[in-house]
View 1 (cartoon, rainbow, N blue to C red):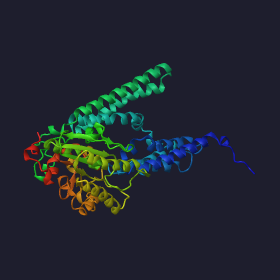
View 2: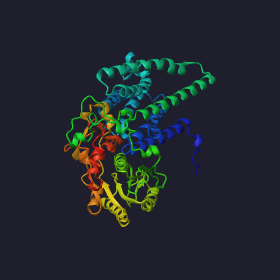
View 3: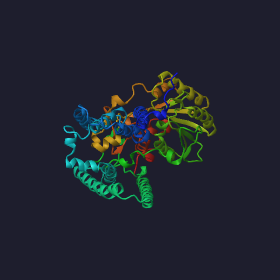
View 4: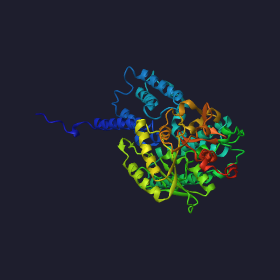
Length: 506
């Protein structure tokens, strides 16, 4: 019997290559799985981008005899340049990036590196002095360009051609200075441990101070919903009443604030996370009122909080918000990352006991599109919960889900004028909304569909009446939700407000 060789017998280079290969495969798989559902996390999380670094490590581990010395080196190198060029032209705001599609530019770069410095080959092209200048400063350019773009948008609004040229020139200047006086000094200077540690700590401190200052600035510039002049920001009035939105007005919220234009529950600590099953809630309106309504459900229910808050404050109601991430207000089992979402089921059970105790008379709810579940299972789960509320004397008002964009609104608005950012209504409004289907089977449930206040008969614009409608592909901005308050109230006669309460927004 021959014993298997011990791991330590395997050359170190091979062992490291095996580890790098595992990192490459695992990270690429994570990226491919996460990108379709959460491209932001897939883009920024280390574990979904580590495969790109691992591929570079694998190239470095190849024996020198392999790199750039085979007969296909030049061909591979030029193929790599073609792949990088294709990525520059083919990838856009609608691409599911990074995911598998990131193999296009990353694989192209790997082929160029693998080709080495041989002539003929891409090295002959890339030795151009201008290309090398940009290549040396590419990381500094990457670091500087985005803060400048965000600052320009905050200070001047949409970037004009002249403004874009100014941003590019400023980026190159700052990138050159930081390359010369930061990168090169750290790279080529003598190693002095104490000095390096002090400079490193100071750098981290400045980063934290800068990030905190920017965060404070952004929190300070959030536009109060009540401060939007209806003459400048007619919002849904532009769709419903044909009110002309004045041109030249930068839409709100600003792109730098767009992702943060959320309902207030997250900031107030009463939007429950995925871990806890406790039905925490916020109280809005008149806390002493005996007319109690509740907003319950997942984040797609939560997006209606700004509108309901305006209604509750105008009518003197007490509004309770019970929302939980990715947790439907329906009796059907959901999974999170392939595992049963146990805290959601517990939360739902406790919430059904809590609502009568709080004296709730009316419940507003909505529902995201839970993919991978049969319509009948979802519909029956909704009906089970609604019938329980009906037995407790609680009225249910179901708000149909809003359209989902096939692209990121901020990416589109950063690249195009607002009039060019829209989706075809027929493609983004679901033919079979499970919430509507459930409501049709239970006459006591009141159904509200706000689609006509978001889209016109043909398209769903990203900007309506100078207000940006979506903060991401499938959640309304808090600003637009608040602007919908009078229409949400009017769609249910029991909740019809006095006209004077809502018709003026100044």
